[in-house]
Image 1 (cartoon, rainbow, N blue to C red):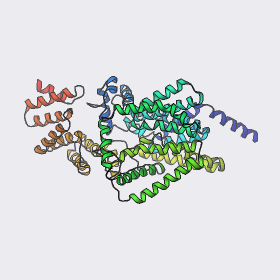
Image 2: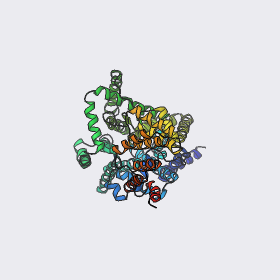
Image 3: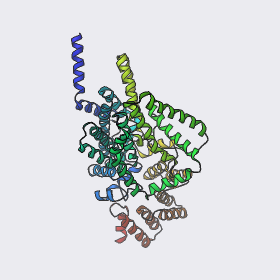
Image 4: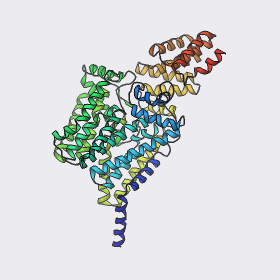
Amino acid sequence: MNKNKFKIFSFQRSLWNHSWVAAAALFLVCCVAYANSFMNGFMMDDHIALFGQTGVENKSFVQIFSQQQADFYRPAGHFILRVILQFAQHNPLGYHVANLFLFFLIVFLFFRLFEKITGDKPLAFLAAVLYGVHPINGMNVNYITASALATFILCTQASFLYFMRFSDERRKRDYFLSFVFFILALLSHEISVAIPVYLAAYLFFIKKERWTHSLGLLAPFVVFMALYFGARFKEFFFARLIHGASEAMGDPAGHFTTWYDLVSWFVSKLVIPHEIIFLWSQKYGAAYFPGKAIVFALILAATIYLIFFRWKQGWKPFVLTVFMVGLLPSVISAFSYFPIVWPLLEPHWFYFSQMGFFLFLAAFLMRLIRRHGQIGIFLCVVLVGILVALAWDYNSKWQTQEKYARYWLSLNRGNLTPYYGLGRSLMDQGDCVGALKAFQDGISTLNTNTVYLLADKGHCLDVVGEDNRSAFFLNSAMAEDPGYAKTYYYVGLYLIKRGDRVNALREFQKAVELDPKFSPAWEYLKRLEQ
Protein backbone atom coordinates (compact mmCIF):
# COMPACT_ATOMS: atom_id res chain seq x y z
CA MET A 1 0.00 0.00 0.00
CA ASN A 2 2.75 2.41 0.95
CA LYS A 3 4.68 1.42 -2.16
CA ASN A 4 1.65 2.21 -4.35
CA LYS A 5 1.20 5.60 -2.68
CA PHE A 6 4.87 6.34 -3.26
CA LYS A 7 4.52 5.45 -6.96
CA ILE A 8 1.48 7.73 -7.36
CA PHE A 9 3.27 10.55 -5.56
CA SER A 10 6.35 10.12 -7.75
CA PHE A 11 4.20 10.10 -10.89
CA GLN A 12 2.48 13.33 -9.84
CA ARG A 13 5.80 15.03 -9.16
CA SER A 14 7.16 13.92 -12.55
CA LEU A 15 4.12 15.45 -14.25
CA TRP A 16 4.81 18.82 -12.64
CA ASN A 17 8.29 18.78 -14.16
CA HIS A 18 6.80 19.11 -17.65
CA SER A 19 5.42 22.52 -18.52
CA TRP A 20 3.39 21.11 -21.41
CA VAL A 21 1.22 19.22 -18.91
CA ALA A 22 0.29 22.43 -17.11
CA ALA A 23 -0.15 24.19 -20.46
CA ALA A 24 -2.52 21.52 -21.77
CA ALA A 25 -4.53 21.54 -18.54
CA LEU A 26 -4.79 25.34 -18.52
CA PHE A 27 -5.83 25.37 -22.17
CA LEU A 28 -8.59 22.88 -21.37
CA VAL A 29 -9.72 25.04 -18.43
CA CYS A 30 -9.92 28.12 -20.66
CA CYS A 31 -11.89 26.22 -23.30
CA VAL A 32 -14.38 24.99 -20.70
CA ALA A 33 -14.84 28.46 -19.19
CA TYR A 34 -15.53 30.10 -22.57
CA ALA A 35 -17.17 27.27 -24.53
CA ASN A 36 -20.39 29.27 -24.95
CA SER A 37 -18.75 32.48 -26.15
CA PHE A 38 -17.70 31.61 -29.69
CA MET A 39 -20.90 32.67 -31.46
CA ASN A 40 -21.15 36.07 -29.75
CA GLY A 41 -21.24 38.90 -32.28
CA PHE A 42 -19.57 42.26 -32.88
CA MET A 43 -20.62 45.11 -30.62
CA MET A 44 -19.92 48.62 -29.37
CA ASP A 45 -16.41 49.76 -30.27
CA ASP A 46 -15.77 46.64 -32.37
CA HIS A 47 -17.45 48.32 -35.33
CA ILE A 48 -15.50 51.56 -34.87
CA ALA A 49 -12.10 50.01 -34.13
CA LEU A 50 -12.24 47.28 -36.78
CA PHE A 51 -14.29 48.37 -39.75
CA GLY A 52 -15.20 51.38 -41.84
CA GLN A 53 -13.72 54.83 -41.94
CA THR A 54 -12.01 54.74 -38.54
CA GLY A 55 -11.25 51.01 -38.31
CA VAL A 56 -7.93 49.23 -38.68
CA GLU A 57 -9.39 47.58 -41.80
CA ASN A 58 -9.04 50.97 -43.47
CA LYS A 59 -5.39 51.40 -42.45
CA SER A 60 -2.11 49.88 -43.53
CA PHE A 61 0.29 48.44 -40.98
CA VAL A 62 2.43 51.56 -41.40
CA GLN A 63 -0.54 53.85 -40.75
CA ILE A 64 -1.36 51.98 -37.55
CA PHE A 65 1.99 53.16 -36.17
CA SER A 66 1.92 56.60 -37.76
CA GLN A 67 -1.66 57.60 -36.85
CA GLN A 68 -3.94 57.60 -33.83
CA GLN A 69 -6.90 55.26 -33.56
CA ALA A 70 -9.76 57.56 -32.47
CA ASP A 71 -8.44 59.36 -29.34
CA PHE A 72 -5.71 56.81 -28.60
CA TYR A 73 -2.28 55.89 -29.86
CA ARG A 74 -1.89 52.18 -29.08
CA PRO A 75 -0.26 50.84 -32.24
CA ALA A 76 1.08 47.55 -30.85
CA GLY A 77 -2.40 46.49 -29.74
CA HIS A 78 -4.03 47.67 -32.95
CA PHE A 79 -1.32 45.89 -34.97
CA ILE A 80 -2.51 42.58 -33.48
CA LEU A 81 -6.09 43.49 -34.37
CA ARG A 82 -5.00 44.16 -37.94
CA VAL A 83 -3.23 40.78 -38.13
CA ILE A 84 -6.28 38.91 -36.83
CA LEU A 85 -8.51 40.83 -39.26
CA GLN A 86 -6.39 39.52 -42.14
CA PHE A 87 -7.62 36.00 -41.34
CA ALA A 88 -10.99 36.50 -39.62
CA GLN A 89 -12.34 39.29 -41.86
CA HIS A 90 -15.99 39.90 -40.84
CA ASN A 91 -16.54 36.57 -39.08
CA PRO A 92 -16.74 37.05 -35.27
CA LEU A 93 -15.85 33.38 -34.67
CA GLY A 94 -12.29 33.92 -35.89
CA TYR A 95 -11.75 36.78 -33.45
CA HIS A 96 -13.09 34.77 -30.52
CA VAL A 97 -10.78 31.86 -31.35
CA ALA A 98 -7.82 34.27 -31.53
CA ASN A 99 -8.87 35.93 -28.27
CA LEU A 100 -9.17 32.58 -26.53
CA PHE A 101 -5.67 31.62 -27.62
CA LEU A 102 -4.25 34.95 -26.47
CA PHE A 103 -6.06 34.56 -23.15
CA PHE A 104 -4.65 31.06 -22.73
CA LEU A 105 -1.16 32.52 -23.25
CA ILE A 106 -1.91 35.11 -20.55
CA VAL A 107 -3.04 32.40 -18.12
CA PHE A 108 -0.03 30.19 -18.90
CA LEU A 109 2.45 33.04 -18.48
CA PHE A 110 0.86 33.85 -15.13
CA PHE A 111 1.47 30.22 -14.17
CA ARG A 112 5.16 30.62 -15.05
CA LEU A 113 5.38 33.92 -13.21
CA PHE A 114 3.61 32.54 -10.12
CA GLU A 115 5.89 29.51 -10.19
CA LYS A 116 9.02 31.65 -10.25
CA ILE A 117 8.04 33.98 -7.42
CA THR A 118 6.59 31.30 -5.11
CA GLY A 119 8.64 28.21 -6.00
CA ASP A 120 5.42 26.21 -5.57
CA LYS A 121 4.11 24.68 -8.83
CA PRO A 122 0.77 23.37 -7.50
CA LEU A 123 0.06 26.77 -5.95
CA ALA A 124 1.04 28.53 -9.19
CA PHE A 125 -1.17 26.19 -11.23
CA LEU A 126 -4.20 26.69 -9.00
CA ALA A 127 -3.76 30.48 -9.04
CA ALA A 128 -3.59 30.40 -12.86
CA VAL A 129 -6.75 28.26 -13.03
CA LEU A 130 -8.59 30.75 -10.80
CA TYR A 131 -7.42 33.62 -13.00
CA GLY A 132 -8.61 31.77 -16.09
CA VAL A 133 -12.15 31.03 -14.89
CA HIS A 134 -12.89 34.24 -12.99
CA PRO A 135 -15.61 36.19 -14.88
CA ILE A 136 -13.90 39.55 -14.35
CA ASN A 137 -11.34 38.46 -16.94
CA GLY A 138 -14.02 37.35 -19.40
CA MET A 139 -13.78 40.48 -21.52
CA ASN A 140 -10.49 39.10 -22.88
CA VAL A 141 -12.42 36.50 -24.86
CA ASN A 142 -15.91 37.98 -25.25
CA TYR A 143 -15.03 41.47 -26.43
CA ILE A 144 -13.64 41.07 -29.93
CA THR A 145 -11.33 44.09 -29.89
CA ALA A 146 -9.96 42.94 -26.50
CA SER A 147 -7.11 41.29 -28.41
CA ALA A 148 -5.52 44.74 -28.33
CA LEU A 149 -5.72 44.64 -24.52
CA ALA A 150 -4.34 41.10 -24.43
CA THR A 151 -1.25 42.50 -26.17
CA PHE A 152 -0.61 44.89 -23.31
CA ILE A 153 -0.97 42.10 -20.70
CA LEU A 154 1.27 39.69 -22.62
CA CYS A 155 3.94 42.33 -23.19
CA THR A 156 3.84 43.27 -19.50
CA GLN A 157 4.24 39.61 -18.53
CA ALA A 158 7.06 39.09 -21.02
CA SER A 159 8.89 42.19 -19.80
CA PHE A 160 8.54 41.00 -16.24
CA LEU A 161 9.65 37.41 -16.93
CA TYR A 162 12.71 38.47 -18.89
CA PHE A 163 13.65 40.94 -16.17
CA MET A 164 13.33 38.16 -13.58
CA ARG A 165 15.61 35.95 -15.66
CA PHE A 166 18.08 38.80 -16.02
CA SER A 167 18.14 39.34 -12.26
CA ASP A 168 18.96 35.63 -11.83
CA GLU A 169 21.45 35.07 -14.64
CA ARG A 170 22.66 38.61 -15.49
CA ARG A 171 22.49 38.09 -19.24
CA LYS A 172 22.30 41.35 -21.16
CA ARG A 173 20.03 39.77 -23.77
CA ASP A 174 17.32 39.22 -21.14
CA TYR A 175 17.58 42.82 -19.96
CA PHE A 176 17.30 44.04 -23.56
CA LEU A 177 14.24 41.84 -24.22
CA SER A 178 12.62 43.05 -21.01
CA PHE A 179 13.12 46.63 -22.16
CA VAL A 180 11.74 45.89 -25.65
CA PHE A 181 8.59 44.29 -24.25
CA PHE A 182 8.19 47.24 -21.89
CA ILE A 183 8.18 49.54 -24.93
CA LEU A 184 5.61 47.30 -26.66
CA ALA A 185 3.46 47.35 -23.52
CA LEU A 186 3.53 51.17 -23.53
CA LEU A 187 2.54 51.07 -27.20
CA SER A 188 -0.41 48.86 -26.26
CA HIS A 189 -1.88 50.71 -23.28
CA GLU A 190 -0.98 53.71 -21.12
CA ILE A 191 -1.57 51.73 -17.91
CA SER A 192 1.84 50.13 -18.54
CA VAL A 193 3.31 53.22 -16.87
CA ALA A 194 3.34 51.19 -13.63
CA ILE A 195 5.75 48.51 -14.93
CA PRO A 196 8.97 50.12 -13.58
CA VAL A 197 7.38 50.29 -10.11
CA TYR A 198 6.44 46.59 -10.31
CA LEU A 199 10.02 45.75 -11.27
CA ALA A 200 11.35 47.85 -8.39
CA ALA A 201 9.05 45.97 -5.99
CA TYR A 202 10.36 42.66 -7.33
CA LEU A 203 13.97 43.72 -6.81
CA PHE A 204 13.22 44.92 -3.28
CA PHE A 205 10.98 42.16 -1.91
CA ILE A 206 12.13 39.10 -3.86
CA LYS A 207 15.77 39.79 -4.80
CA LYS A 208 16.61 42.00 -1.78
CA GLU A 209 18.55 44.42 -3.98
CA ARG A 210 19.82 47.79 -2.73
CA TRP A 211 17.78 50.80 -3.83
CA THR A 212 20.78 52.40 -5.53
CA HIS A 213 21.37 49.29 -7.65
CA SER A 214 17.65 48.99 -8.46
CA LEU A 215 17.45 52.59 -9.59
CA GLY A 216 20.40 52.05 -11.89
CA LEU A 217 18.76 49.02 -13.51
CA LEU A 218 15.42 50.77 -13.95
CA ALA A 219 16.74 54.15 -15.10
CA PRO A 220 16.42 53.32 -18.85
CA PHE A 221 12.78 52.26 -18.31
CA VAL A 222 11.94 55.49 -16.50
CA VAL A 223 13.78 57.72 -18.99
CA PHE A 224 12.10 56.14 -21.99
CA MET A 225 8.70 56.38 -20.31
CA ALA A 226 9.20 60.08 -19.57
CA LEU A 227 10.27 60.80 -23.16
CA TYR A 228 7.38 58.79 -24.57
CA PHE A 229 4.67 60.48 -22.54
CA GLY A 230 6.33 63.86 -23.04
CA ALA A 231 6.03 63.40 -26.81
CA ARG A 232 2.33 62.56 -26.46
CA PHE A 233 1.51 65.28 -23.95
CA LYS A 234 -0.44 67.48 -26.34
CA GLU A 235 -2.84 64.75 -27.40
CA PHE A 236 -6.54 65.09 -26.66
CA PHE A 237 -6.28 62.17 -24.22
CA PHE A 238 -3.76 64.03 -22.08
CA ALA A 239 -5.59 67.34 -22.48
CA ARG A 240 -8.56 65.71 -20.74
CA LEU A 241 -6.34 64.69 -17.85
CA ILE A 242 -5.00 68.22 -17.44
CA HIS A 243 -8.48 69.70 -17.58
CA GLY A 244 -9.77 67.17 -15.06
CA ALA A 245 -6.87 67.77 -12.70
CA SER A 246 -7.50 71.52 -12.76
CA GLU A 247 -11.20 70.94 -12.03
CA ALA A 248 -10.33 68.61 -9.14
CA MET A 249 -8.29 71.31 -7.42
CA GLY A 250 -11.53 72.91 -6.24
CA ASP A 251 -12.92 69.79 -4.55
CA PRO A 252 -10.29 67.10 -3.86
CA ALA A 253 -12.52 65.42 -1.26
CA GLY A 254 -15.28 64.84 -3.78
CA HIS A 255 -12.89 63.40 -6.35
CA PHE A 256 -11.30 61.16 -3.72
CA THR A 257 -14.73 59.83 -2.78
CA THR A 258 -15.51 59.11 -6.41
CA TRP A 259 -12.24 57.22 -6.76
CA TYR A 260 -12.94 55.26 -3.58
CA ASP A 261 -16.35 54.22 -4.93
CA LEU A 262 -14.85 53.12 -8.24
CA VAL A 263 -12.16 51.00 -6.59
CA SER A 264 -14.69 49.55 -4.15
CA TRP A 265 -16.79 48.37 -7.08
CA PHE A 266 -13.77 46.67 -8.67
CA VAL A 267 -12.69 44.93 -5.47
CA SER A 268 -16.26 43.79 -4.78
CA LYS A 269 -16.38 42.15 -8.22
CA LEU A 270 -13.14 40.31 -7.54
CA VAL A 271 -14.63 38.88 -4.36
CA ILE A 272 -18.20 38.33 -5.64
CA PRO A 273 -17.95 38.04 -9.45
CA HIS A 274 -21.55 38.84 -10.34
CA GLU A 275 -23.08 41.65 -12.45
CA ILE A 276 -19.76 42.64 -13.99
CA ILE A 277 -19.49 45.08 -16.89
CA PHE A 278 -16.32 46.04 -18.70
CA LEU A 279 -16.60 49.70 -17.82
CA TRP A 280 -18.12 51.07 -14.61
CA SER A 281 -18.99 54.75 -14.21
CA GLN A 282 -19.50 56.47 -10.87
CA LYS A 283 -21.48 59.67 -10.60
CA TYR A 284 -19.38 62.37 -9.01
CA GLY A 285 -20.18 63.04 -5.36
CA ALA A 286 -18.69 63.85 -1.97
CA ALA A 287 -21.52 63.09 0.47
CA TYR A 288 -19.74 60.31 2.34
CA PHE A 289 -16.15 61.45 2.17
CA PRO A 290 -15.28 61.48 5.92
CA GLY A 291 -16.35 57.89 6.59
CA LYS A 292 -14.72 56.58 3.43
CA ALA A 293 -11.51 58.42 4.25
CA ILE A 294 -11.36 56.63 7.61
CA VAL A 295 -11.90 53.22 5.98
CA PHE A 296 -9.25 54.01 3.39
CA ALA A 297 -6.79 55.11 6.08
CA LEU A 298 -7.34 51.87 8.00
CA ILE A 299 -6.86 49.75 4.88
CA LEU A 300 -3.72 51.66 3.95
CA ALA A 301 -2.32 51.30 7.47
CA ALA A 302 -3.04 47.55 7.47
CA THR A 303 -1.40 47.19 4.07
CA ILE A 304 1.74 49.04 5.16
CA TYR A 305 1.91 46.92 8.32
CA LEU A 306 1.65 43.65 6.36
CA ILE A 307 4.15 44.67 3.70
CA PHE A 308 6.88 46.29 5.77
CA PHE A 309 6.48 44.88 9.29
CA ARG A 310 4.74 41.50 9.10
CA TRP A 311 6.00 39.92 5.88
CA LYS A 312 8.93 42.18 4.85
CA GLN A 313 10.29 39.82 2.18
CA GLY A 314 8.96 37.21 -0.24
CA TRP A 315 6.10 36.91 -2.68
CA LYS A 316 3.33 38.06 -0.33
CA PRO A 317 4.51 41.66 0.21
CA PHE A 318 5.54 41.78 -3.45
CA VAL A 319 2.12 40.89 -4.94
CA LEU A 320 0.28 43.02 -2.38
CA THR A 321 2.46 45.98 -3.36
CA VAL A 322 1.78 45.31 -7.03
CA PHE A 323 -1.96 45.19 -6.35
CA MET A 324 -1.94 48.50 -4.46
CA VAL A 325 0.35 50.25 -6.93
CA GLY A 326 -1.83 48.95 -9.76
CA LEU A 327 -4.75 50.90 -8.33
CA LEU A 328 -2.91 54.23 -8.48
CA PRO A 329 -3.41 54.88 -12.22
CA SER A 330 -7.15 54.62 -11.57
CA VAL A 331 -6.83 57.86 -9.60
CA ILE A 332 -6.56 59.56 -12.99
CA SER A 333 -10.09 58.45 -13.85
CA ALA A 334 -11.55 60.32 -10.88
CA PHE A 335 -9.42 63.41 -11.54
CA SER A 336 -10.00 63.64 -15.29
CA TYR A 337 -12.49 65.11 -17.70
CA PHE A 338 -14.34 62.69 -19.96
CA PRO A 339 -17.19 64.47 -21.75
CA ILE A 340 -19.22 61.37 -22.65
CA VAL A 341 -18.93 59.46 -19.38
CA TRP A 342 -18.94 59.94 -15.63
CA PRO A 343 -15.64 59.13 -13.85
CA LEU A 344 -14.91 55.56 -14.85
CA LEU A 345 -12.97 52.43 -14.05
CA GLU A 346 -12.24 49.57 -16.41
CA PRO A 347 -11.31 46.20 -14.84
CA HIS A 348 -8.84 45.45 -17.62
CA TRP A 349 -6.56 48.15 -16.20
CA PHE A 350 -5.78 45.67 -13.41
CA TYR A 351 -5.47 42.45 -15.42
CA PHE A 352 -1.80 42.28 -14.47
CA SER A 353 -1.73 43.92 -11.05
CA GLN A 354 -4.67 41.88 -9.72
CA MET A 355 -2.54 38.70 -9.80
CA GLY A 356 -2.02 38.97 -6.05
CA PHE A 357 -5.72 38.35 -5.42
CA PHE A 358 -5.55 35.00 -7.21
CA LEU A 359 -2.30 34.02 -5.52
CA PHE A 360 -3.68 34.71 -2.05
CA LEU A 361 -6.91 32.86 -2.84
CA ALA A 362 -4.95 29.91 -4.23
CA ALA A 363 -2.66 29.91 -1.16
CA PHE A 364 -5.70 29.70 1.12
CA LEU A 365 -7.13 26.78 -0.87
CA MET A 366 -3.78 24.98 -1.02
CA ARG A 367 -3.49 25.26 2.75
CA LEU A 368 -6.88 23.58 3.07
CA ILE A 369 -5.86 20.85 0.63
CA ARG A 370 -2.55 20.17 2.37
CA ARG A 371 -4.06 20.17 5.84
CA HIS A 372 -7.44 18.56 5.26
CA GLY A 373 -6.97 16.58 2.05
CA GLN A 374 -10.30 15.67 0.46
CA ILE A 375 -12.22 18.46 2.20
CA GLY A 376 -9.85 21.04 0.72
CA ILE A 377 -10.02 19.44 -2.73
CA PHE A 378 -13.83 19.39 -2.58
CA LEU A 379 -14.01 23.08 -1.66
CA CYS A 380 -11.54 23.94 -4.41
CA VAL A 381 -13.52 22.02 -7.04
CA VAL A 382 -16.77 23.63 -5.88
CA LEU A 383 -15.27 27.14 -6.10
CA VAL A 384 -13.87 26.54 -9.57
CA GLY A 385 -17.21 25.09 -10.65
CA ILE A 386 -19.08 28.15 -9.36
CA LEU A 387 -16.68 30.48 -11.17
CA VAL A 388 -17.11 28.54 -14.42
CA ALA A 389 -20.90 28.75 -14.06
CA LEU A 390 -20.67 32.50 -13.46
CA ALA A 391 -18.32 32.83 -16.44
CA TRP A 392 -20.85 31.03 -18.65
CA ASP A 393 -23.59 33.35 -17.43
CA TYR A 394 -21.40 36.37 -18.17
CA ASN A 395 -20.48 35.03 -21.62
CA SER A 396 -24.18 34.75 -22.46
CA LYS A 397 -24.62 38.49 -21.87
CA TRP A 398 -22.35 39.18 -24.88
CA GLN A 399 -24.47 37.34 -27.47
CA THR A 400 -25.65 40.49 -29.24
CA GLN A 401 -25.01 44.19 -28.97
CA GLU A 402 -28.61 44.85 -27.95
CA LYS A 403 -28.49 42.26 -25.17
CA TYR A 404 -25.24 43.55 -23.74
CA ALA A 405 -26.30 47.19 -24.00
CA ARG A 406 -29.53 46.46 -22.09
CA TYR A 407 -27.57 44.45 -19.49
CA TRP A 408 -25.08 47.31 -19.10
CA LEU A 409 -27.80 49.93 -18.73
CA SER A 410 -29.61 47.79 -16.15
CA LEU A 411 -26.52 48.08 -13.92
CA ASN A 412 -24.95 51.42 -14.78
CA ARG A 413 -26.17 54.39 -16.83
CA GLY A 414 -23.15 56.67 -16.63
CA ASN A 415 -21.64 56.07 -20.07
CA LEU A 416 -22.88 57.08 -23.50
CA THR A 417 -21.62 53.88 -25.13
CA PRO A 418 -24.48 51.49 -24.17
CA TYR A 419 -27.13 54.08 -25.10
CA TYR A 420 -25.57 54.41 -28.52
CA GLY A 421 -25.06 50.65 -28.82
CA LEU A 422 -28.71 49.97 -28.01
CA GLY A 423 -29.92 52.66 -30.40
CA ARG A 424 -27.68 51.42 -33.18
CA SER A 425 -28.95 47.84 -32.73
CA LEU A 426 -32.57 49.01 -32.90
CA MET A 427 -31.76 51.04 -36.02
CA ASP A 428 -30.41 47.92 -37.72
CA GLN A 429 -33.70 46.18 -36.88
CA GLY A 430 -35.68 49.03 -38.45
CA ASP A 431 -36.96 50.34 -35.10
CA CYS A 432 -36.06 54.00 -35.49
CA VAL A 433 -38.56 55.08 -32.82
CA GLY A 434 -36.87 52.84 -30.24
CA ALA A 435 -33.46 53.99 -31.43
CA LEU A 436 -34.43 57.64 -30.98
CA LYS A 437 -35.52 56.95 -27.42
CA ALA A 438 -32.20 55.24 -26.63
CA PHE A 439 -30.21 58.12 -28.16
CA GLN A 440 -32.23 60.74 -26.31
CA ASP A 441 -31.90 58.88 -23.00
CA GLY A 442 -28.13 59.00 -23.39
CA ILE A 443 -28.06 62.68 -24.30
CA SER A 444 -30.36 63.59 -21.40
CA THR A 445 -28.53 61.51 -18.81
CA LEU A 446 -25.03 62.69 -19.66
CA ASN A 447 -25.81 66.07 -21.19
CA THR A 448 -23.47 65.35 -24.11
CA ASN A 449 -23.26 63.50 -27.42
CA THR A 450 -20.91 62.25 -30.14
CA VAL A 451 -20.81 62.67 -33.89
CA TYR A 452 -21.95 59.04 -34.28
CA LEU A 453 -24.99 59.62 -32.11
CA LEU A 454 -25.88 62.96 -33.72
CA ALA A 455 -25.66 61.57 -37.25
CA ASP A 456 -27.65 58.42 -36.50
CA LYS A 457 -30.27 60.39 -34.61
CA GLY A 458 -30.59 62.77 -37.53
CA HIS A 459 -31.14 59.84 -39.89
CA CYS A 460 -33.73 58.23 -37.61
CA LEU A 461 -35.65 61.50 -37.44
CA ASP A 462 -35.58 61.62 -41.23
CA VAL A 463 -37.02 58.10 -41.42
CA VAL A 464 -39.90 58.93 -39.07
CA GLY A 465 -40.65 62.15 -40.98
CA GLU A 466 -39.43 64.88 -38.62
CA ASP A 467 -37.79 67.02 -41.29
CA ASN A 468 -36.72 70.05 -39.29
CA ARG A 469 -35.27 68.10 -36.36
CA SER A 470 -33.51 65.75 -38.75
CA ALA A 471 -31.81 68.65 -40.52
CA PHE A 472 -30.80 70.17 -37.19
CA PHE A 473 -29.07 67.00 -35.94
CA LEU A 474 -27.40 66.28 -39.27
CA ASN A 475 -26.01 69.82 -39.33
CA SER A 476 -24.91 69.38 -35.71
CA ALA A 477 -23.06 66.21 -36.68
CA MET A 478 -21.23 68.05 -39.46
CA ALA A 479 -20.26 70.79 -37.04
CA GLU A 480 -19.08 68.24 -34.47
CA ASP A 481 -16.83 66.42 -36.94
CA PRO A 482 -16.69 67.58 -40.58
CA GLY A 483 -14.61 64.52 -41.43
CA TYR A 484 -17.21 61.87 -40.55
CA ALA A 485 -18.30 60.32 -43.86
CA LYS A 486 -21.55 58.77 -42.72
CA THR A 487 -23.10 62.16 -41.94
CA TYR A 488 -22.80 63.16 -45.61
CA TYR A 489 -24.31 59.83 -46.62
CA TYR A 490 -27.29 60.49 -44.36
CA VAL A 491 -27.64 64.03 -45.74
CA GLY A 492 -27.62 62.57 -49.24
CA LEU A 493 -30.47 60.23 -48.29
CA TYR A 494 -32.32 63.19 -46.77
CA LEU A 495 -32.02 65.17 -50.01
CA ILE A 496 -32.98 62.27 -52.27
CA LYS A 497 -36.13 61.76 -50.22
CA ARG A 498 -37.03 65.37 -51.00
CA GLY A 499 -36.17 65.18 -54.70
CA ASP A 500 -32.94 67.21 -54.58
CA ARG A 501 -30.76 64.89 -56.68
CA VAL A 502 -28.11 67.52 -57.53
CA ASN A 503 -27.20 68.32 -53.94
CA ALA A 504 -27.59 64.68 -52.94
CA LEU A 505 -24.94 63.77 -55.53
CA ARG A 506 -22.61 66.35 -53.97
CA GLU A 507 -23.11 64.88 -50.48
CA PHE A 508 -22.52 61.31 -51.66
CA GLN A 509 -19.34 62.41 -53.42
CA LYS A 510 -18.12 63.97 -50.18
CA ALA A 511 -18.92 60.75 -48.31
CA VAL A 512 -16.86 58.57 -50.65
CA GLU A 513 -14.00 61.06 -50.65
CA LEU A 514 -13.76 60.70 -46.86
CA ASP A 515 -14.33 56.94 -46.85
CA PRO A 516 -13.39 55.64 -50.32
CA LYS A 517 -13.16 51.95 -49.40
CA PHE A 518 -16.27 51.29 -47.33
CA SER A 519 -18.78 54.09 -47.74
CA PRO A 520 -22.40 52.91 -48.32
CA ALA A 521 -22.80 56.05 -50.45
CA TRP A 522 -21.16 54.32 -53.45
CA GLU A 523 -24.40 52.56 -54.41
CA TYR A 524 -26.39 55.80 -54.55
CA LEU A 525 -23.56 57.69 -56.21
CA LYS A 526 -23.48 55.22 -59.10
CA ARG A 527 -27.24 55.49 -59.54
CA LEU A 528 -27.20 59.29 -59.63
CA GLU A 529 -24.28 59.46 -62.05
CA GLN A 530 -25.99 57.21 -64.61
